Length: 405
Image 1: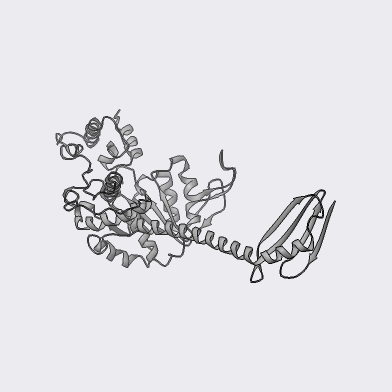
Image 2: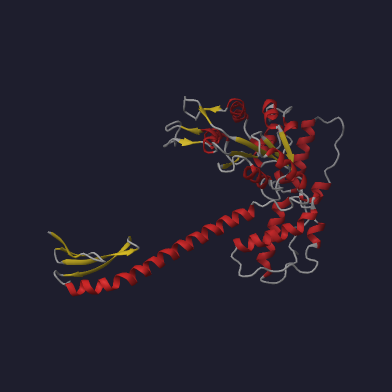
């Protein structure tokens, strides 16, 4: 049995509620007539609360309401602060350091192409910062208010690439429990960044070409043609043109993507940017690692960095800075943690082969030589794929074709 009655109206609405042997008294907490919560007192038994209790709670209404309002505002501030920190980290990670120096030409080309919807092809070695350039192109474009959707074409299994790019209908295949929009749909009105475009399987290349030509596609398992307004920015560390005679990349797709190529120079060709990049990475990593200090750089601490050739480019420099921060324990950074040059012999000692060898034979022997140097390791920072400038899956595919075991 439930009995609900209003005791008295006024600044605070007080109520008695009796449910069996349980009763409670509730006071609405308001700030400027806005209800922000309730203050409830409960006890066992019935008829414990009198008008005197109501008067007391009415006196407590305002201080409790102010306290609750302050607590809620504090929680909002904490949440906003965390969001701003995350935004700042993302922004710090997507800054084109060197735009006024070694990347001046890249910045000039970006200013020309960003306002258009023309496809852009970013060319450069692994780790040169192609994703940062793609993000900058998007932010400078007319589509900057739309989404920027990233796809690593080399990280998606071939069996799933169509579903990832174009989406799938419910029941299209085993495990397709719900309809899922693909990356093209999600990028509608914005930019689609196709990283490692050279690793895209042949079947997906055909479908991508169709989208570039007509703007139409179908979800996997769907019959209805769909359209998406998408600006394409593609990136690769490979020579796509040389892949065409090998049948690894479609010529017509190459022509579609190669409208406005932008070459991003490796770090060894813009060493003047290293000091600014080191300071940038120190700030970024100190924030990410929640370090209570920001160490200085020891006198002459940059000398070794300026002398190094950086085969891993900007990504390797970032890793070196992070390692130094982990080990410094508040001391000035000297960057004595540069990687050894053990793989340099592999890079410099790639010998000449007899002129009567076939191209496939030379490639196979070259791959075997690199595999011997890496102890058979294919993937990873010091793996054969990194040394050869190939994606691990591409190297495995080529080894299979050439009979390299």
